[in-house]
Figure 1: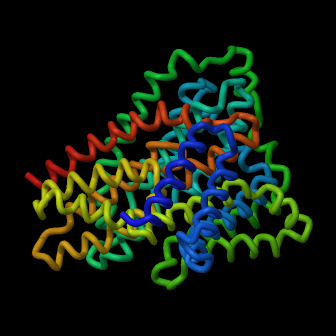
Figure 2 (figure 1 turned 180 degrees about the vertical axis):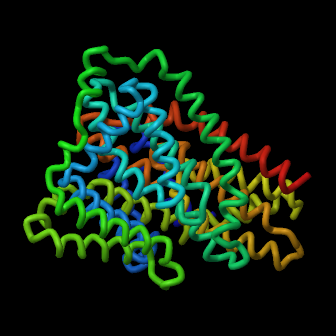
Figure 3 (figure 1 turned 90 degrees about the horizontal axis):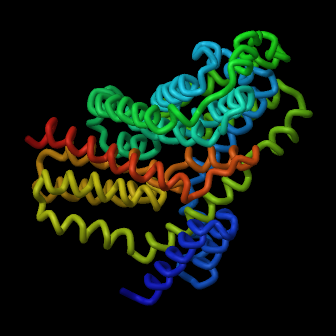
Length: 426
């Protein structure tokens, strides 16, 4: 290992240790870590900028603006009351309804967009019922990553695999990944019910107050609501069609955001920019540059090659190794650069005589998507929810999420292992 690779590893581990300790804000740590990678010559500035995934950043900014303007119409307060009334204002039923709504939304939108829509609803309904919002938000982070596993557009790793492997269609992802995603969702929902059924309660008076609320009265600006929903709808259609239109999802999101700003008037511009989660966005920038140091010095590539050599080309061994390695790595390293490294490695296996790569591709998708539940920095959706919660003075700490997310991630990957083995390897 050369000196630069060693320095990159030290900076990366030190940054993650500080993020986990939470003694310094994670955005400051990630940015300083990224800047050190450039200052010490691990990566030059141009290379560092090249590694920042501006598609992710642009998608987040676009959706934050759209959601921020849409929120001003009162539609999220409407949804909060509507869902609470459907659950008879029972806190545990509300958690499960929002859990399922988040999973379904994450499958057919993408999980970042879904949590941006769901988090304000959750904060509003928990405020009404006077129950702690953190269990609800953590359950939705978990649901967003499980739901995002089910389709090609639900999570960035699936989008990348679908783009790289032309034989795998949109329908293939649903046929092969949705069944196990549904099983994992049901098991995880049952665990949340066991965990929180005795901890989440509210008074009969508050329940009655919620049941008497008129959700329609929460819509304060119908014209803004109509404009927002039309443009949100067009944006979502754009997400479905972005590959055939040869457009990145960030372009679609930003086009929708600025079209909505054009229709909403200039006074919305500053309000929208104030609501944008800049701390989360800068955290991503720092994280991308930190990981760039490991990529450019060959650390990630060496790890992947070494892991492949362990299996000697055996299909079952390779599938299981890719599944578990992807899950553990994606819990602590952003899964986008990891998947970007793994795709050419798996393609290379095809040229070396492994004829049936399909189980390996599904293992990579399941590991990378489900692994995002392993820690707070495992997926974009996790950080978005944590940022929104912190703004409302309900911080989700790294350790608190780890205690719930990591065991649930291990269980989901265990279930996925059984599924891959029974369906493809027996």
